[in-house]
Length: 366
Image (cartoon, rainbow, N blue to C red; front, top):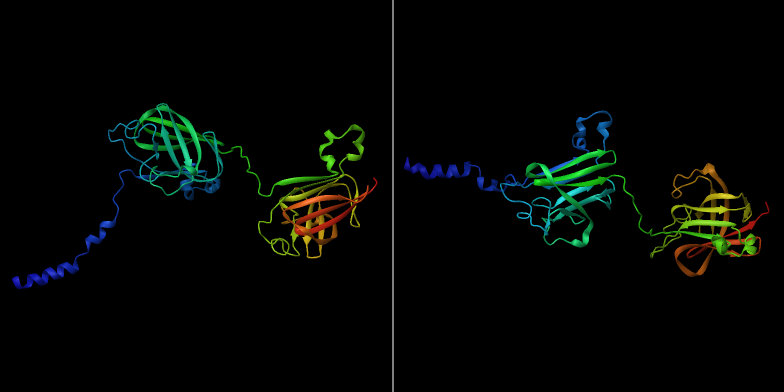
């Protein structure tokens, strides 16, 4: 039998699974990760029916849940005055699926890491755009987007594990409640915040003819009649930024809004003739089909509109072909000006880059 032992050992070695390679499997984390949604039913909407089946998510929070294990928590395990990841392991992440008012701070749609700095009677909770970080150490504070103060309360129950929950208040409001040990905080969240837009990269501008009509309160009383507004144009002013505009950014033969953002708006305060075509007094969207030697200006009554897409051509009231020339000055931003020709005539000049489109306008007696 002894002479077979080495052979049996060899067979056993190759026939037995290699358990050493199995050691990479993770054990259960002592501070397991958890996820909560708002509204709660959105997490299992595939089991729902009717309108509930189509409910949209509004918030999601992912955090790791340490346990108390008879330790003193706030002021000890979690020191006062030092930033805490609001959990364990990875930094806690909260996602908003629309802009919200988070504890009094307006926060745009997106995913943020969430931290808290503790004091005896309140927490300062901070949201950051920095992602994929472990805890709060060495984080980039320049990526903070909001910090709010929330007061601490005595919890109704003693939480063994860090716990977070969304609580519905009404259709536009919910609370994020965070509890651990005998302490909890409540962060109010509103889904209809006041949103202030940043300065537009193609800012809206206005030009009037005559120019003094834009400030009649500064015009002398005996000159008011001759300074009454005759034309007003409101348009957004895109910039070149090194781009080729006509024939490049604006393809020849395509319809352009004569600006950016909303369609350019022109108002005639009396009936006019634009380069041989009569146009009634009123307010119109102004579009242009751009070509190398000419533009077709289109006056359209389908208002308001964002750009020229899906324009209702049945509401075009006039189309006027105007000449295009090249100027000496290279204009970085789109501009529209009026050049007086006589008491009854003015040229509206649209310029961008070195290209100039000129529309002669004659004022008719009403």
